[in-house]
Image (cartoon, rainbow, N blue to C red; front, top):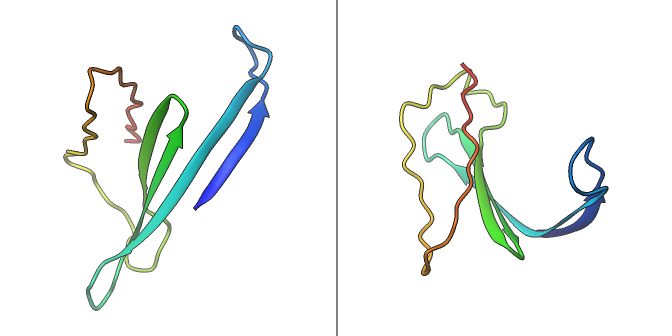
Length: 90
């Protein structure tokens, strides 16, 4: 677990500096196998939103991978907005 409270300066835009403040939790998952692979789940909570991502670090038993489908979801109680960034590295 960690917290961050910093600012950064965008190259262009409406603001001269942007505050980057969040609490973060990193969860390391390890496969139960003879050649275990690791995956990191990283969760961030901001004052005005939440975020998560999957990380597959370089490791001995994982040379490459292909993501065929992704079914992650976050359910919230109210009718809220969501923003997402597609990650197509092919």
